[in-house]
Length: 105
Picture 1 (cartoon, helix red, strand yellow):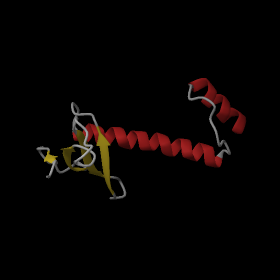
Picture 2 (cartoon, rainbow, N blue to C red):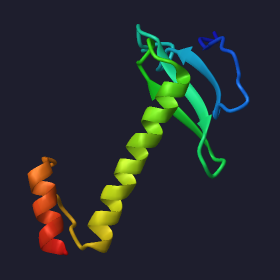
Picture 3 (tube, rainbow, N blue to C red):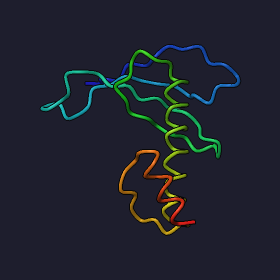
Picture 4 (cartoon, helix red, strand yellow):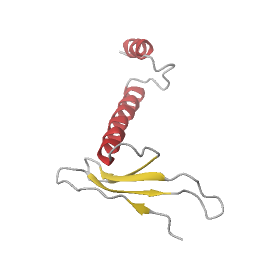
């Protein structure tokens, strides 16, 4: 039995969103009750990315933008940890991060 439902949307030329579906997750014996959403979009490099979420009330473009922003933050933390030799940040508060950066520099 097929449990995917395609989402209808208007494709715009400037959008990087390729599509979206809702689905249930799991096997036939242990499937989730709630449906989840899979949004497919293209990254800057042209790679296709699939984001799995339970957000149903915002647009696919907003979900794609949220993911890209989150990825930028993760990439920045990866750069900080690698190039400034900070393998662990003890806290995510502004003061602690600034203190770590100041000490590393």
